[in-house]
Structures are given as C-alpha cells and as structure tokens.
Image (tube, rainbow, N blue to C red; front, side, top):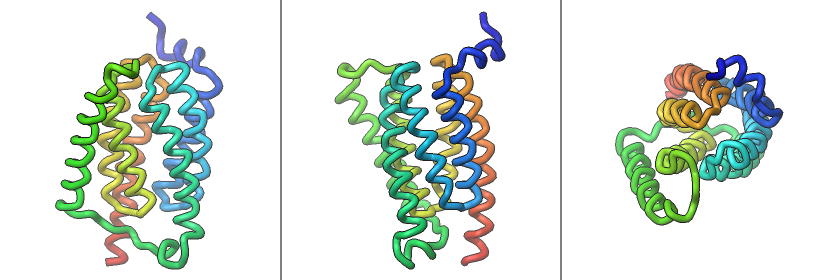
Length: 198
C-alpha cells in the first residue's frame, strides 16, 4: 500500500493547480474579499478536469463548471452589481430560511438521484449528487453574503473528505480538511462583521 507521500508524488498538474488556487479562494472568501472569485474560477477549471477525467465524479465535475459561472457572477455582484450590491451587508437566513433551503436540497437530491442513477456511472453517486446540490445552494448564499453559507460549507467539506479518501484523491481530501478549518474561521469572521452592522 502506498504511503500518503508516494500518493502525493503521483498527483497531476491539474490537481496541484486546483489545490493552490482553491486555498487562495477560501483565504480571500474568509476575508470577505471579492478577489476570491478570480481564484475560485481558476481552481474550479482545474478541479473540474480532475474530477471528470481522473476521479469519475461526474456530479462534482458539473459542480466545478457551475463554480466557474458563479465566480464570474460573484465578481460582478460584489464589484459592479450597483450600489445596493456593492454595499450589501452580511445577512442571515434564520431558522425558517435555512429549513426551506435544507428541505429543498434534500428533496432535490433524492429526486435527481432516482432520475439519473441508472444513466450516469459515478463514484459515491448519492453523496456526490447531494454534496453538489448543497454546494450550489451554499454558493448562492455566498454570493448574496449570507453568513449561513459557512455552516453549509463545514458540513459539505466534511462529506467531501470522505468522498475523496474513498476515491483515492487524498490531496483533495486534505484541501477539504483545510477548507473545513477555514470555513469555521470564516463563520466567526463574518459573524463579527454581522454583529458590527446590526
């Protein structure tokens, strides 16, 4: 059995690039800086290639394409979306808002899984799909600066740690571990900003 170090030596260029730019993305997102979307776009491009061609995580590859598009939209919303968007304060969905999003995400995951399960060959099909659905939800919440998105990312990243370890993508699992820690930091950073604006 290969050691973790030996596995890291076999990691390709796309995985290393997605790792580097992913860490830059999350670092600047935690700081509430719009440049995070530039690094997110680059990271997602490399990550999508790796997920589709090397890891057989089709839903995850689709998610990365979505991230590329959302990064473009995120840059616009945070920088050029008009005075209202540029000055948009961090908000919270509350219990009812989160309950609606979580319920929607669960139902949508189950419905899509039963519709496409026999048509698409992918590793960890339901978990891959559910994390994709909730990542899309969390990305929308990020673009609109809802603090709740950090809680979503903590749970999503923990699930991805399992997925990537199970599919032999230890480097991506390590990124998710780092992202989990940074998401916790992001929540507390944004929470302080949120309290200052209340």
